Image (cartoon, rainbow, N blue to C red; front, side, top):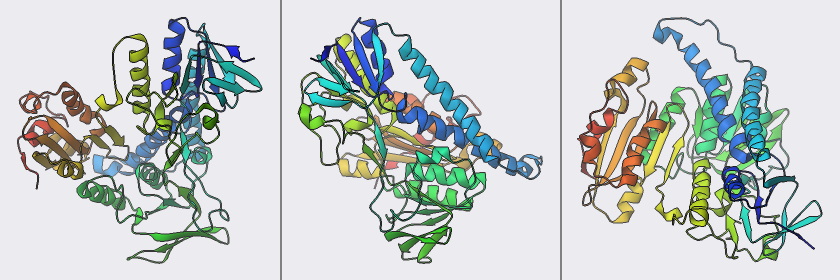
Length: 458
């Protein structure tokens, strides 16, 4: 017979520890099951390690630019073992913090092993079965390994295995020109590798507007990154100790040859081996668990949070899923996925901060939209810092006067975008920001200026 508990939590990604804390505070006997790394993708091979590596790459990049600022650091040599050791230390601190947090919970028990459903709300792990009225799935996702010709014949890296690299690739070929691929491309170029980005689509980061994608490409190319778009029929093969990526592009050579290949072409949910069919939990064609506006699955008493539910692919959307579930379960406060505004960042340097609709989405909405756009060269603080690449673009609903979207590409844009996001949640008119007195000299002070240059979006 299964052991009866009050709640089962599968996976320890961004939503799970905080959810366990709420279950613990409510006095509910809870089993949380983790098959591999406590903390999930963000802590172990996602946000925290990659942004730590990006910080090291940025420091090396600034040192090489010393003459622009009036000093010389001499020849800059990157010690990849030291870079990895720093990254590992930061990751360990975060992972230990999550593990210790769960360990201090009086009503929560951490089980290590692979969880599988044996019934609607019954889960087995390590030969032991648990049954609960409430089951929460927070299993995250993994890198897609595309079925490219030759992919099984060559060594390749993913964003996960890249975390174990402690040497400098002579020439890194990145297959995939979207968020993960571009962050690694710039990072390793700054560490000292030759880098080529190969993207099947006609341009980088296809979901962004053309002007955003074009400027990001220009920024990367200025740093010496080779970019090949429109790369149809990608194939991999060995050439001695080298890896050849065969291409069919309108421009450039028919191959890209490097010492290492990173596959960064998307992610899939970790749902294929959970026994969801035995629980009757419905998934879509790609394996994402179908949920309603409150993260409830097709089975009563079972919720799915984070990447596995296909309603967001970010740490912040996963945590917001926890907030939605907790508010509805414990606080009598109805919160919904549909209440949130799309927001994310691309952590290249300079970063891209995005909120709300893109121009493409605004045109498709049928709404009357105003647009304002100014280059970062208009920002005194950016000129002072020597960081004038990029631009700020803001969209406004012409009828409601509310902010509709923003694409901020420039110095500190990943932080500045929140000055607009918060106003969007407040549903305040754009004039609230336009008339605000901002501190000088800051980068954010360009926002009111942009809003003073609104024109109809055509």
